[in-house]
Length: 605
Image (cartoon, rainbow, N blue to C red; front, side):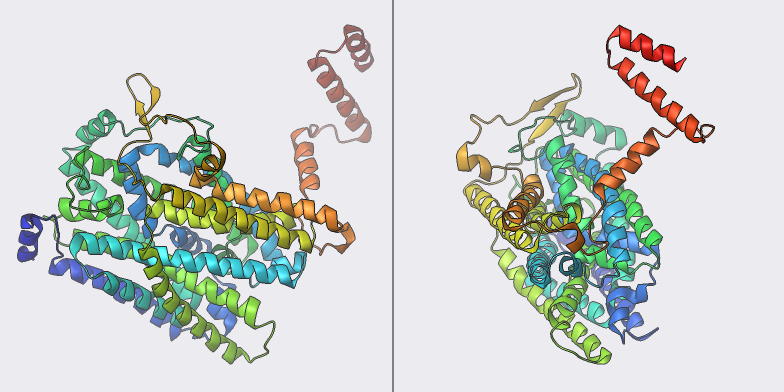
């Protein structure tokens, strides 16, 4: 261990090395994750039915489900990308926490009850119930594409950072993560995925908290750390700039982020599958509610890590020292640099990082195997339960191999991992969200409009997304704040002022990636409605029961509750008098003619 510490402090290139304790802690994470998978493979029903393998016999409780829901998309991308974002550009990104409220309330009260009462096994079965089989297949294929691409980002990101900072073999780390994930998912099914998520969430929070505590100590204490980040302009105020091309403002994060959250927690199979594995609908809704504090804690820890990094390094970043080649490697460099005198803590954080990666990838494997089996294979081929279960496990294994292949594709990309990951969900998840919203909120939408809308949304997504990616390729990301706040005067000061706002196609390509989901889902709904009216809208009697949310009835019920008379006025006469009096008061409040006011007031008296 002491030899490893000497190497940490003496390497002039900035390269850091693991001690034996670090390797042991990292290995224990992989062994523990594998052990959970093996436990559920050889206990209980032994994953012998598709119901147990895919939905854990619909027996899960809300606490483990909420931690699993959070861990599914609180990936290594967030643990690496968010602190790097805060270090470089300040705490403006923290305002994305505002979108969590609507982003979880809407699924809890609209999507989850509807999907649960329809007794779905795949969320894309809804599309067949509401539209037709062709729409269901289109939705399934789109989801498979989205998750396969995202898996590449999720597995490659921690391996790249680990390789760059410690010299750990890049593809060895990719293969280790992919292999462990694939095996325990294929063996233990959804139960193994959920309970490893719980274990990995504890490791994630522990690793981040340890780094923050040690980092604050290295920065000179809590008060000194605060002064450094404040004077360095990393405490951002609320930027209310409505310009959608500004990368991070309150509106892009708080409003654009709602659409992103809905695509993740409302209609994504990986999350819906967890809701459907709950024992009751009430527990499914409660698990969604409990995600909110979990996400806020995860966001807080990631942002605090970024501030602690700035308190330790200031503007003299390892990127400028050329110890690293990308800001996405900063977090691991910081951990290896600042925790070099604490053997085991670097290994704990790397375990935390790979825990996030494992939780994301395993959820993707399980959901991909489910939709492929339920939506693409079972409707066309009849088979026994045992054979269907075996095929589901083989599918999970196959997606593990594809995941490793996609990691190589991500290797060719040149973008911030945080932005790349969220862009993928906005580009592909946005059209899927629009497709579900078209069916749920618009009874007049028909199958032709749904397919045309989805196609238009995907075209718009890749046009804007790829166009924006190509337009940014020549320039590198600057380690300068996009928004910083002068706290002494409480005035938000832009650190970079554009000479001219981009116009035309350049303006469209400059759209903040946080608006991708909103733009693409709106395109699906708009085009879907236009085509539906052109080809003949669906009649009310032709819509399957329970597939449309009663917007007007819900609004009327809410309005009735807001203006409900007092409990004593229960008779019809009293109700009429109350309604009449309420109307009079509204007219008076609006400032109508005095004579009307006097006449009505006299009659009321």
